Length: 258
Image 1 (cartoon, rainbow, N blue to C red):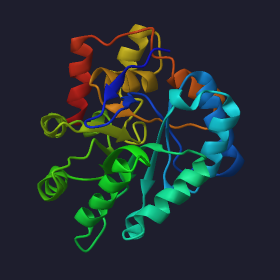
Image 2 (image 1 turned 90 degrees about the vertical axis):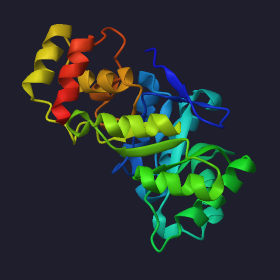
Image 3 (image 1 turned 120 degrees about the vertical axis):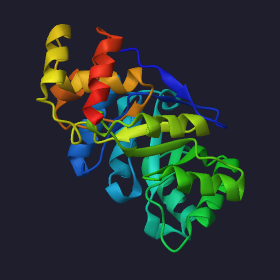
Image 4 (image 1 turned 135 degrees about the vertical axis):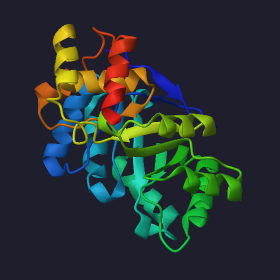
């Protein structure tokens, strides 16, 4: 498959628009799913400290034989680890078997006004070469602005729950205006895949509605990280080259968010 990648502000790395999510995957099933994803052509893996599967993701990457520099790896700091940023990152790097992470995110805004302090530690980790890019997850535009105002550094990415039913052009514009790449998680959980708009467009292109949703993200240049433990579905979700949504189809899907 040919999946475009987006440059990240201030980072020497580009982020593939399609990634493989690993939330709620543990143990051998996580390992096998990542192996299947890499075999299907995914070159972007998303994990987190709180997922408890970094070791399996790292082992799958190593065993796959895919060169490290061809795979973009994201992990995340749990908010309760505020104040223990470096120890958490070191543990993630060890578990993943990587000298450096491609993207490290603050998983949720930490409480008690600690976001800026955590962000300063993220900047330091990036400057020390332990992660190539830094960003946030589940942040609002005002919370992103606070980080920028206090440190002069804007997150490269914000990962939020996203899908057609959550589409809001003002959210997309707010990120673009700030130079922040928008990344969506739970694309299928937030979407009614039986919606006649999606099933109709899918029938037109001879694909399933899930791939219509993924193609919609990619054409909006919104990173998307579907997950599945089924090899056939993993491969099918990666098969996005054979069709392009028309402007009218994109607009019809956009309207699901209204």
